[in-house]
Amino acid sequence: MQFTKAEEYGIFGVLYLAEKDRSIITPLSEISRAQKIPEKFLAKIFQSLSKSGIIRSHRGVRGGFTLAKDPSEISIKEILETIQGPYHFMKCLNDFKSCTMNRIEFCPLREILLIAEKRLVSVFEEYTLSDLIKWNKTKTAAS
Image (cartoon, rainbow, N blue to C red; front, side, top):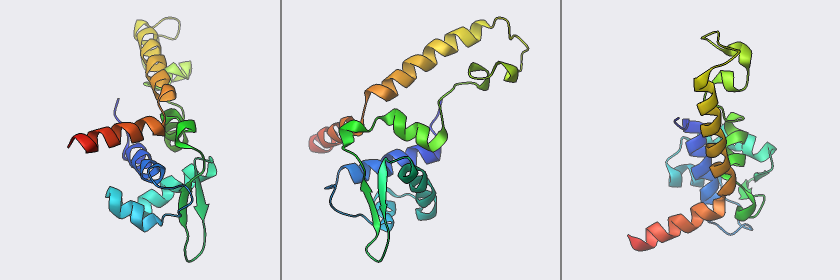
């Protein structure tokens, strides 16, 4: 499993907002520069995150973005699934008809992948932006 660029950029973009005071509106260009993310790509990602209520979009000359909720209320799963949709290691885990091996009745690989997927998703549910902020501060302080 590998994160897409959109997922990676989305997490780092939201993390940048989460480390700021929630009353400060941050321009997209600032986030893009600070996180080294192409601005147009980040704009598309932030559009989805805004629609889902993770971040808030502010229009106008002094427009930009703020976090819509407290970082402790935003799970990593929520961010990832907003950007890419529900997590599945293989299409067949969610849709039997997409099985390329025609083993709809029983597939031992499917069973282990379901277990792994559930564990991974539970980790994404368990950790929040607050955890990422803490880890980032700890790592930065140790450097």
